[in-house]
Length: 211
Ligand code: 0O2
Image (cartoon, rainbow, N blue to C red; front, side, top):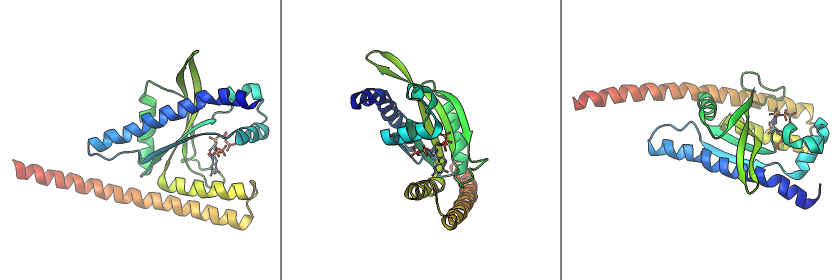
């Protein structure tokens, strides 16, 4: 593909990522206005660089003419949550939206990947409005906790450094780190329970004061 072909091919993907980042960040602001816990901590997004698209296409045997339907993560959104339970809330929230259609789900939390990777992936079809009409774009939305994100970001860069062939001793350490990240999520979930119990007790106490 020529450079300007790539530009026009990727334009609706850029539009989808920009729009979804604004929309999904808006959910957090709404929770903040209500002074209630936001299941979303922060949102990021990116369009896959051309070199990575070509690399993945080669690795997976995807033909250029099939990129649109066969490469589901050219447009990528990440939604980070504080607690594991928030992930389900975010997924249900995405399912209830009428501006996108969920077409696939991959649960790498219940079944983590061999590397130790944990995350919940949702593939959505998102319509962008262009000057030639509506175009449906596939977007991969990765939903994960802050701790899962910390691990994945580090593992991704190590993987890049070693071109996918991470030495065994580092692989073992990464797996241990993944277990530590899992324990951190578990511990935080316990604290969350404490906080919520305390809030119920506190609100009952203030209710009594007011009667
Ligand atoms: P980037 O740089 O994140 O865009 P596959 O690519 O074969 O693993 P598939 O079928 O394309 O899988 O989709 P899947 O399983 O949803 O995974 C795609 C993306 O998930 C990856 O994108 C990563 O972002 C993330 N991911 C999956 N497995 C791992 C892992 O073991 N470690 C880390 N750090 N991330 C992972 P890309 O294409 O790798 O690149």
